[in-house]
Image 1: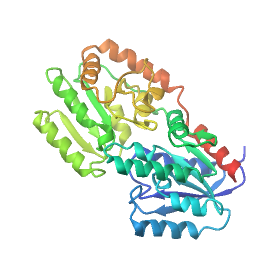
Image 2: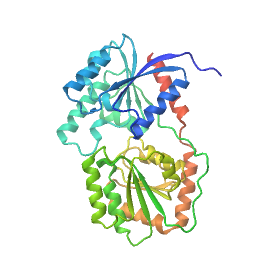
Image 3: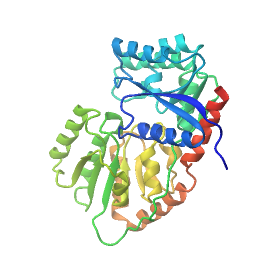
Length: 352
């Protein structure tokens, strides 16, 4: 079957597209999948300072959009779109703007209330000028409709998943390896994971925390200090960003991430695809991704509950195996990248 005729799309993305995060990984994969569907995708690079651009960066972004021809179809990553209210108002009639929202900007952890409110106002205004809005989960779509006043139909194109070529093989008598994947930023709440592990110091385990240590250096330093204060530096490894994340999933026995909020939770889906039982928090879209058959979810910030769930898996190999089997079964219902790209393509085609 031949691909559809080529269609032109500008994809505006702030910062480095090669950055090792779930959002950038989604963007990279969608560019490839849209290309396979006949879209000719032109990358429009925006300053890396988004969503907190200075005047100069806003002027640079404005010049980049002003250089697009009338009627151009532009898909704009939400990391920038929500901070471009003035540009969206100015260019919304001339260009066909489509917003791709991974995570509402105002809901990032650690923001001062005035900053969060300014971002909420900006994102509401910007979204009102989009021809279409694409969210990466039903939970995010609900948030945009209720909390950000989006009254147009919101398409949901979640991240896709791929089964590993070799099925996971675990068991034996090794010390269980706990894997946590996510940039070291306040919202991921790795400090709560360390608190839980400190309470389980008498139980055999090892832990690797994989994710960027440069996204928020202060949080990364505080986490390293917390690990040392707990006396766990010999058991908890801050691995940073790694070139082969698949090897991390294959080498683990349990996935644990106490993120307070997720717009989707790609790391949780990847863990399930690799047959890992999950311990997490039910903030945002995580409960939509991880069913009870695949893991144990507690409330965000619940250190006692998180430690209890993690301890149950460490001490009960049969429970660990049952949830691992449930994770693989649930993973079969997760979307493929091709299916999600078709949803995005149909939305773009409707606007075009």
